[in-house]
Length: 307
Ligand code: SF4
Image 1 (tube, rainbow, N blue to C red):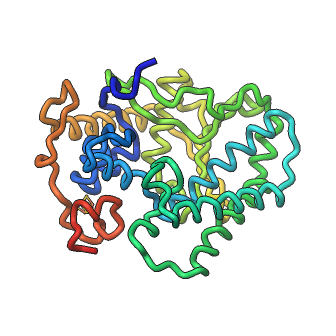
Image 2: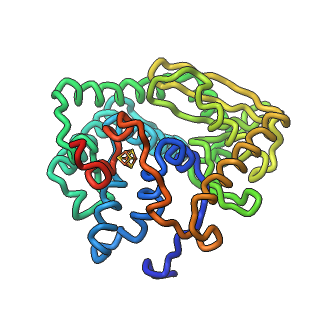
């Protein structure tokens, strides 16, 4: 195995990388270049600082991740034939959140950046107790809805050895670039179709994430060799809960390919050395939209005057 120090920062594409790039070039630089190597406590303090800031999540992002992780855990249990008592399961999840909250509040993440790190704690955002309570209520509601979904009953009628939880690759080669695209869950329906599922915990119109779903169609086509006409893309809004099914076709798949190509090309055009994936900070401009800075993880380093 390679030692950490021998890792090289190789260019790869992901949906979140694309959104960061669209939002603010400097933020993109910090996230994918400036913080590189900061996992080591011995890293240059400026790099280490960026790395720690990079780990911060807003309370909503945190809640979303908690729900995703809990669903993954539940599906593992169901796959192994275990019964999951819903309320005790949810109680454990909420208990875990309390532990994470306390750890973040105490700033443990500054020593151990992979532990819970909330933006609100790092930046002393005053959040009322009720607002934190609303976050955990939302997590509990999403999980309760998950267990009641007719879709879950449908999934459970299919063969678990064909479920994808983590054993389908999340990365594949797209025209020479590694792309990270993977649905949250996938299974083969009883009538032989491939269903790819995206769990959503926030608001937003159904189908709003169509680029993301299109990327899943690409994932199905290029990695699993399943053509769009045989794929159902399911966006599950766990808050309502509402399941929106979307189908894709070859023409729209080509549009996704083109969008991906453009995105990769735009990112590479910013590099000092695209071959070696080397970036220079000064090439990455700061956004002019200060509203984005307010909620940016890197504000303390980039625009400390906004504190
Ligand atoms: S503080 Fe503003 S300009 Fe700086 S990285 Fe964040 S969003 Fe970009």
